[in-house]
Amino acid sequence: MITAVVLAALAMACGLGSWRFTTARWTSRAPRLAIIVWQSLGVAWGLATTGAMLAYAVQPYETGVLPGLLAFARGEQPVHAWDPLHVLALIAGLTALAVLVVVLIMAGLQALRARRRHRMLLALISHENPGVPGVRVLDHPGAAAYCVPGLRSQVVVSEGALKLLSEDEMAAVLAHEAAHVRERHDLVLLPFAALRRALPWSKVAADAQSQVELLVEMAADDHARRYCSPRRLATALLRFGTAGAMPTPHGMMGVHAHNVMARVDRLIKPGPELATSARYGFIALSVTLLTITPFLWVIQL
Image (tube, rainbow, N blue to C red):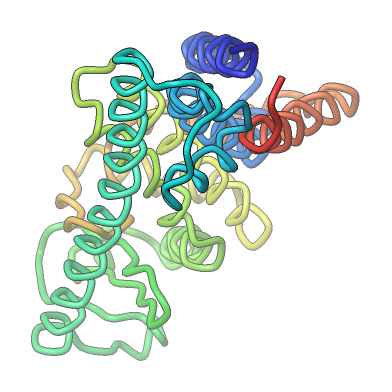
């Protein structure tokens, strides 16, 4: 019973932490670290929420969550008799866990199918350009720049973008898209998109997805700053914003007008780096969440 209470309290704490985290101001100063914290909060919340229900459900076995579920799967008799509340908790916990897993798998499969179809389409309608080697170019007057993530990743720009941006600005945009590909930001965003799909009514899930999307863009901006002038990247973002960039195809990652000014301000007027003590504190928080929650699935308190 104590395990269920502790897991329920942890789930509430993660939910409250996620809500407070959406308004945190330090995240733009350390976007990669903020992404790690978001991921740890999401994993801990999912395991704690389902674990609280399952811990109560397997209480008749007088074991932890995982040992109790294994005993139930083997058909072993519990120490105490089942009652309707334990049965209901078991059904609710397994259903919630199955929904989270299935939605995550379905979101991943849909993204893979969309990217496969888009690669086939690019083979037909795009071409190479000596001015931007290794990049697929669309013959379209609108401004577009995006990447197709995956094992066979591709960076795509349009003729309109090539005409809109200077050579330095295009180099900055390509460095930004290369960061998305190299750091597999699509995998970072996938769980949050799946959570939003599983909980479409949840404002916290919607805010979490929006925040992580912005942090991923900021992290890619930081990577691009190593190879180009931050002002060039800021100028390119402004040009895309004012020109009305083409919508990024589903399952891809690209330049769009969302939160452009926040990114431009950060590039032109970067804030001070996050203090080392704060960095270690948030890392310790993430490690603790990712350690204690699975541990509570195994032990019985």
